[in-house]
Image (cartoon, rainbow, N blue to C red; front, side, top):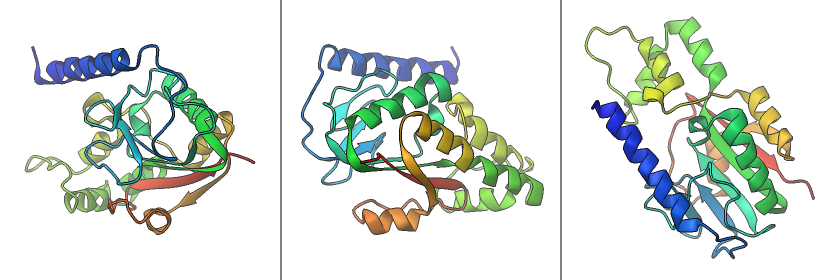
Length: 216
């Protein structure tokens, strides 16, 4: 059995375990009005940090609806998560569920690898600038002699875990399909000015940050 197969099986087991843990649980009160979606190991104080494992409340983001009640979150932040979800089958349904759980006027902040930046980077220098930026943040190290354009491949597939990259137009379509409005491109700095408790990722070079609102 390959290492990749073992990794996939392990992740499927974590998803199954998270689904079992929330079975039959609906309309829950949240201990925070702020939702950190797909937190990984980055737990942020004052937020409800959720992920498939090791979080405040383990969930599978593809198992909807999520267990919290309607109109309970004032802010939602998710960084480097949505690219792991199938656009039509998982992401848009998740955004619709977030819309359900968001209060009127709530803010949704998302970021992921930027489709436009990846394509432009290939045309300019085969992705060298993106690769050098990733190295400063502990990104993948290409084998010696491998052409740097393979880093562009990694952005798109990341060993099969990336499903889609997004630009502003595609992400706006997904958000508006779910009911959100006022979708705009922002920077990580703007997000950190709004929520200073988040640790910086310093990933603006390769990522798109988008802010959207649930209309009042």
